[in-house]
Each structure stands twice: as C-alpha cells, then as structure tokens.
Length: 79
Image (cartoon, rainbow, N blue to C red; front, top):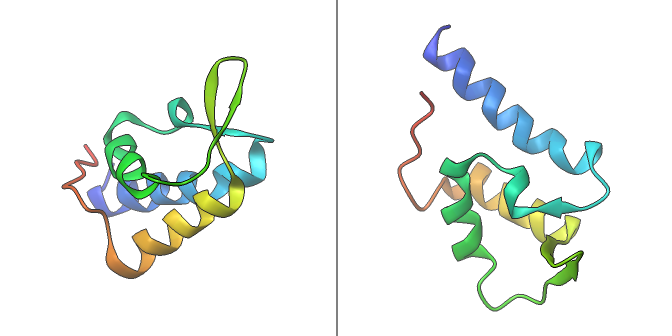
C-alpha cells in the first residue's frame, strides 16, 4: 500500500472513532497514537467506566483539532 494512502486511512480512522463508539477508551487507539493523547489529556477530568479510563468526545475532538493544526507531539510511524 502506498505510504500516503496508509497515513490518510489511519488519520481517517481517528476522525471516525467518535462517530462509531459511544465511549472512547485509550485502548481504542493504535499504540503509536496513545502517548500523544496521554500528554494532551494531562490535567483534564476523565471518567471511568468498568475500571477503564473514558475520554470524552469533546476532549477527543480537541485532540484531533490539535493534530490537524499542529501535528503530533511525537514521531508517529505509520508503517
């Protein structure tokens, strides 16, 4: 698969996640994105459901906006 297509598909998957799921868990993301999201949510109020950290959709969308405008804080390998 073309690397540009791969990047586009993976970013698109991130964008569609809040539309497909009622709640977003850190484990719903691929491992390469988790550190960036963890750093972004530091200090935010999060919920817990069934013992797992739940990320609010508004907070998740703010993270997506940050990615679109400033990119990831870490190098992400789309391989």
